[in-house]
Image 1 (cartoon, one colour):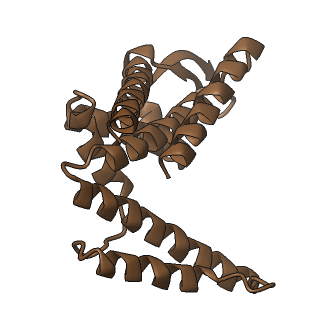
Image 2 (cartoon, rainbow, N blue to C red):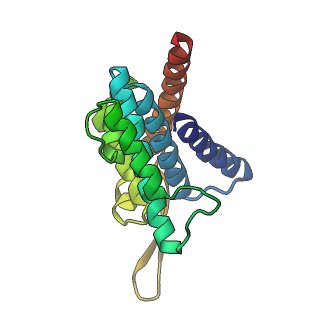
Length: 202
Protein backbone atom coordinates (compact mmCIF):
# COMPACT_ATOMS: atom_id res chain seq x y z
CA UNK A 1 0.00 0.00 0.00
CA UNK A 2 2.90 2.37 0.74
CA UNK A 3 4.50 1.62 -2.61
CA UNK A 4 1.24 2.18 -4.47
CA UNK A 5 0.62 5.52 -2.75
CA UNK A 6 4.22 6.61 -3.33
CA UNK A 7 4.10 5.73 -7.04
CA UNK A 8 0.76 7.50 -7.55
CA UNK A 9 2.08 10.64 -5.85
CA UNK A 10 5.17 10.69 -8.07
CA UNK A 11 2.96 10.25 -11.16
CA UNK A 12 0.90 13.30 -10.16
CA UNK A 13 3.95 15.49 -9.61
CA UNK A 14 5.57 14.28 -12.82
CA UNK A 15 2.40 15.13 -14.75
CA UNK A 16 2.59 18.66 -13.33
CA UNK A 17 6.26 18.89 -14.32
CA UNK A 18 5.42 17.91 -17.90
CA UNK A 19 2.58 20.45 -18.07
CA UNK A 20 4.95 23.17 -16.91
CA UNK A 21 7.60 22.18 -19.45
CA UNK A 22 4.99 22.30 -22.22
CA UNK A 23 3.75 25.71 -21.04
CA UNK A 24 0.22 24.32 -20.66
CA UNK A 25 -0.55 25.63 -17.19
CA UNK A 26 -4.11 26.57 -16.27
CA UNK A 27 -5.42 27.86 -12.91
CA UNK A 28 -6.97 24.52 -11.90
CA UNK A 29 -4.83 21.53 -12.86
CA UNK A 30 -1.78 22.29 -10.66
CA UNK A 31 -4.05 22.36 -7.60
CA UNK A 32 -5.71 19.10 -8.61
CA UNK A 33 -2.43 17.30 -9.29
CA UNK A 34 -0.74 18.51 -6.11
CA UNK A 35 -3.83 17.61 -4.11
CA UNK A 36 -3.55 14.05 -5.39
CA UNK A 37 0.17 13.97 -4.63
CA UNK A 38 -0.34 15.35 -1.13
CA UNK A 39 -2.99 12.73 -0.35
CA UNK A 40 -0.75 9.97 -1.71
CA UNK A 41 2.36 10.99 0.21
CA UNK A 42 0.33 11.58 3.37
CA UNK A 43 -1.22 8.13 3.09
CA UNK A 44 2.17 6.48 2.75
CA UNK A 45 3.53 8.47 5.68
CA UNK A 46 0.44 7.67 7.77
CA UNK A 47 0.94 3.96 7.11
CA UNK A 48 4.60 3.93 8.04
CA UNK A 49 4.44 6.29 11.03
CA UNK A 50 2.06 4.50 13.36
CA UNK A 51 3.34 4.60 16.97
CA UNK A 52 3.83 0.83 17.18
CA UNK A 53 3.66 -2.29 15.04
CA UNK A 54 0.09 -3.14 16.03
CA UNK A 55 -1.15 0.28 14.98
CA UNK A 56 0.79 0.17 11.71
CA UNK A 57 -0.80 -3.21 11.00
CA UNK A 58 -4.24 -1.86 11.86
CA UNK A 59 -3.79 1.10 9.55
CA UNK A 60 -2.59 -1.09 6.68
CA UNK A 61 -5.44 -3.54 7.10
CA UNK A 62 -7.96 -0.70 7.44
CA UNK A 63 -6.78 0.68 4.11
CA UNK A 64 -6.86 -2.77 2.50
CA UNK A 65 -10.36 -3.29 3.90
CA UNK A 66 -11.57 -0.02 2.38
CA UNK A 67 -9.78 -0.86 -0.87
CA UNK A 68 -11.64 -4.17 -1.12
CA UNK A 69 -14.93 -2.49 -0.19
CA UNK A 70 -14.47 -0.13 -3.13
CA UNK A 71 -13.54 -3.07 -5.34
CA UNK A 72 -16.72 -4.87 -4.29
CA UNK A 73 -18.75 -1.77 -5.15
CA UNK A 74 -17.15 -1.69 -8.60
CA UNK A 75 -17.88 -5.38 -9.09
CA UNK A 76 -21.51 -4.73 -8.23
CA UNK A 77 -21.68 -1.72 -10.57
CA UNK A 78 -20.20 -3.65 -13.49
CA UNK A 79 -21.68 -7.08 -12.74
CA UNK A 80 -18.14 -8.50 -12.81
CA UNK A 81 -17.17 -11.54 -10.80
CA UNK A 82 -13.67 -13.06 -10.75
CA UNK A 83 -13.28 -16.28 -12.70
CA UNK A 84 -10.85 -19.17 -12.46
CA UNK A 85 -11.11 -19.47 -8.70
CA UNK A 86 -10.30 -15.82 -7.98
CA UNK A 87 -11.88 -14.21 -4.94
CA UNK A 88 -14.26 -11.27 -5.09
CA UNK A 89 -13.74 -7.98 -3.29
CA UNK A 90 -16.20 -9.05 -0.61
CA UNK A 91 -14.36 -12.34 -0.07
CA UNK A 92 -11.00 -10.57 0.12
CA UNK A 93 -12.49 -8.16 2.62
CA UNK A 94 -13.62 -11.06 4.79
CA UNK A 95 -10.06 -12.43 4.68
CA UNK A 96 -8.64 -9.07 5.76
CA UNK A 97 -11.03 -8.83 8.68
CA UNK A 98 -10.16 -12.39 9.73
CA UNK A 99 -6.47 -11.44 9.77
CA UNK A 100 -7.22 -8.40 11.94
CA UNK A 101 -9.22 -10.57 14.35
CA UNK A 102 -6.43 -13.17 14.47
CA UNK A 103 -3.91 -10.44 15.34
CA UNK A 104 -6.30 -9.07 18.00
CA UNK A 105 -6.07 -5.57 16.51
CA UNK A 106 -8.34 -2.68 17.35
CA UNK A 107 -11.43 -2.55 15.08
CA UNK A 108 -10.77 -1.60 11.49
CA UNK A 109 -12.23 1.72 10.39
CA UNK A 110 -12.37 3.23 6.91
CA UNK A 111 -9.55 5.81 6.71
CA UNK A 112 -10.79 9.29 5.85
CA UNK A 113 -8.49 11.45 3.76
CA UNK A 114 -8.75 14.49 6.02
CA UNK A 115 -7.96 12.45 9.11
CA UNK A 116 -4.97 10.86 7.36
CA UNK A 117 -3.67 14.35 6.49
CA UNK A 118 -4.12 15.59 10.05
CA UNK A 119 -2.19 12.58 11.38
CA UNK A 120 0.54 12.63 8.72
CA UNK A 121 1.33 16.34 8.96
CA UNK A 122 2.94 16.21 12.44
CA UNK A 123 4.87 13.08 11.41
CA UNK A 124 6.39 15.25 8.67
CA UNK A 125 7.08 18.12 11.08
CA UNK A 126 4.25 20.20 9.60
CA UNK A 127 1.37 22.07 11.23
CA UNK A 128 -1.77 20.02 10.64
CA UNK A 129 -4.18 22.94 10.29
CA UNK A 130 -1.99 24.63 7.65
CA UNK A 131 -1.75 21.45 5.62
CA UNK A 132 -5.51 21.04 5.97
CA UNK A 133 -6.13 24.57 4.71
CA UNK A 134 -3.99 24.03 1.61
CA UNK A 135 -5.68 20.70 0.94
CA UNK A 136 -9.15 22.24 1.23
CA UNK A 137 -8.32 24.89 -1.34
CA UNK A 138 -6.88 22.28 -3.69
CA UNK A 139 -9.93 20.06 -3.19
CA UNK A 140 -12.17 23.00 -4.04
CA UNK A 141 -10.41 23.40 -7.39
CA UNK A 142 -10.46 19.65 -8.03
CA UNK A 143 -14.23 19.50 -7.50
CA UNK A 144 -14.97 22.63 -9.53
CA UNK A 145 -16.15 24.70 -6.58
CA UNK A 146 -16.55 28.45 -6.86
CA UNK A 147 -15.00 29.68 -3.62
CA UNK A 148 -11.35 28.74 -4.33
CA UNK A 149 -11.35 31.07 -7.31
CA UNK A 150 -12.06 33.93 -4.91
CA UNK A 151 -9.81 32.74 -2.11
CA UNK A 152 -6.79 31.14 -3.80
CA UNK A 153 -6.47 32.77 -7.24
CA UNK A 154 -5.24 36.18 -8.35
CA UNK A 155 -7.36 38.33 -10.68
CA UNK A 156 -5.23 39.69 -13.52
CA UNK A 157 -7.67 41.28 -15.95
CA UNK A 158 -11.33 42.15 -16.37
CA UNK A 159 -13.06 42.42 -19.72
CA UNK A 160 -16.40 44.25 -19.85
CA UNK A 161 -19.18 42.50 -21.71
CA UNK A 162 -21.99 44.00 -23.75
CA UNK A 163 -24.41 43.45 -20.88
CA UNK A 164 -22.15 45.28 -18.43
CA UNK A 165 -20.89 42.10 -16.76
CA UNK A 166 -17.12 41.76 -16.53
CA UNK A 167 -15.23 38.56 -17.32
CA UNK A 168 -12.37 38.20 -14.86
CA UNK A 169 -9.12 36.43 -15.80
CA UNK A 170 -7.68 34.46 -12.90
CA UNK A 171 -4.19 33.00 -12.47
CA UNK A 172 -2.54 30.85 -9.82
CA UNK A 173 -1.84 32.73 -6.61
CA UNK A 174 1.71 31.61 -5.90
CA UNK A 175 1.45 32.73 -2.28
CA UNK A 176 -1.30 30.11 -1.87
CA UNK A 177 0.08 27.53 -4.26
CA UNK A 178 3.71 27.45 -3.11
CA UNK A 179 2.97 26.10 0.40
CA UNK A 180 0.99 23.20 -1.09
CA UNK A 181 3.93 22.27 -3.30
CA UNK A 182 6.27 22.54 -0.32
CA UNK A 183 4.03 20.31 1.82
CA UNK A 184 4.16 17.69 -0.93
CA UNK A 185 7.95 17.87 -1.09
CA UNK A 186 8.36 17.61 2.68
CA UNK A 187 5.93 14.70 3.02
CA UNK A 188 7.64 12.86 0.16
CA UNK A 189 11.05 13.32 1.76
CA UNK A 190 9.79 12.25 5.20
CA UNK A 191 8.02 9.22 3.74
CA UNK A 192 11.26 8.13 2.06
CA UNK A 193 13.20 8.58 5.31
CA UNK A 194 10.73 6.67 7.47
CA UNK A 195 10.30 3.88 4.94
CA UNK A 196 14.05 3.32 4.56
CA UNK A 197 14.59 3.49 8.33
CA UNK A 198 12.00 0.81 8.97
CA UNK A 199 13.34 -1.35 6.11
CA UNK A 200 16.82 -1.19 7.66
CA UNK A 201 15.43 -2.11 11.08
CA UNK A 202 13.92 -5.38 9.85
